[in-house]
Amino acid sequence: MNSESNGKQTANAIEVRALRRSFDHQHVLNGVDIDIPAGTITTIVGPSGCGKTVFLKHLNLLLRPDSGSIVIDGVEVTRLGARGLNSVREKFGMLFQAGALFDSMSVYDNVSFPLVEKTRLSAREIDERVRRTLAAVGLEGMGHKFPSEMSGGMQKRAALARALVTQPKILMLDEPTTGLDPTRTGSIHQLVRKTQQDFGLTAVVVSHDVPEVFSISDRVAFMHRGRMQLVGTVDEVMSSDDEDFKRFLAGRASGDDLESQVVS
Amino acid sequence: MQVVEFIERVGAYILDSILALGNFALFLIRSLMYAVLPPYKLRLTLRQIRIIGAESLMLIVLISTFTGMVLGLQGYHTLHLFGAEDSLGTLVGLALVRELGPVLAALMIAARAGSAMAAELGSMQASEQIDALTVMAINPVQYLVSPRMIAGVVSFPILTVIFNVIGIWAGYAVGCGLLGASGGAYFNNLAANMSRHDVALTLYKALVFGVVVMSVCCYKGYHAKRMATGVSRATTEAVVLSSVLVLAWDYFMGSILL
Image (cartoon, rainbow over all chains, first blue to last red):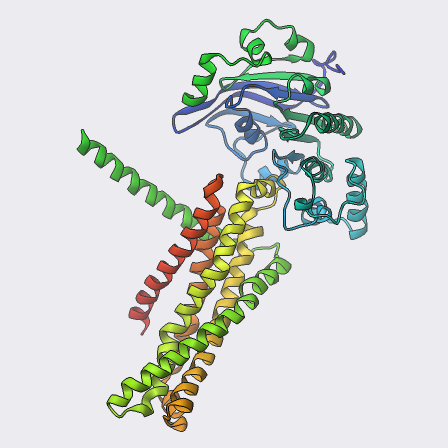
């Protein structure tokens, strides 16, 4: 699983430096630094309220930081205008926590949507790509269904298909397995790993499923109080003797942590 | 201490209100700007015209019929006191064309289509569907709001004209058919006293109400809070605020343009 041995030579798909963001005097991001090497799966874990989702919303350009820099695929994005942002956005796919499928459209229309709206592909090419992507996530022949007619796991797969259909370079996944049972969690994890390898993607995963999610991760970042407290390969992070991380793994929050969720 | 707190609260409230007003103005400008800039969303716009316009038609027919009937009834009895039944057509026609047609049509569409629109956009916001559009490099205002604005601008004047015509005929049916006013005088007086200016006013009002109702309902839905009560609150606020604004605007436009 560990393709990190040549990590130093690998170009970084994403580089984040000293990223800060506060909301109403609450410092949610306290100087985040992280490099995400191209062609790897980097998983961000940490207690609820540590700023994972806010951080991901900065990576996918939904929020702008107060200070700091984000370089995606060689482009500094924090000060880009609307057109520049859109050209960066076209490089990535995003899987939202609840799927965010358009519930007024069938699964097929959901998956074809970014192609219809953003590309000049012919109807035949679109059809072929949608069918291929649906098959890749195990939803062959399900295109006619509406999101409301599908189970949570199938919705996640459909949302993953929509994120993959544009063949992005970078895939971001916000808690891809929340609300799924252990079997489905495992199958989504395998699916993420397989698609990452098939498409040679860079993937950023925010997850609660520790330690299960480590099995598909190349690198792990432990986020704590708005910072990346630990970043490294799975082995490095697992063998670290950081007290906060050990507590997090054991499922024990310190009094400080609980307090910081309320205050910070 | 309490005085300071009170002043702080008032200050915060005023700042919030100014901020919200500025946000609304920007939202309105952007949605109108994207309505005229390519890429044009013809299919989405037609769909919204169907939802806002065509599907509101039965409601408009029903409301205008009863409004015209009431005007015919009350107008006849009031005018009868002065022996001026012949002016019934003028009374019903001008009341509908100048005020009641555009206002009642706008209130009805706000209640029917505006509330549904606020709820739909609100639940799209709550389930991150609007964020999903943004992340796909699709402008959500251009995709979701502008087609609804165009549909409002197209549908409101048409529905208002239908409202006026049906109302005038319903007033005629009650006043002349049931109560015995003169049918010829009804339409002669109506034609003599209604000017082009009145017709222009009704269309102008309908157009402005279309923009007001659609922008308020879209704004409220689009900015719904992501919690259980967020969508219901957005829906209520959308209908209440757009109704109040329609009535307030009606007075100002009437006093300036009449």
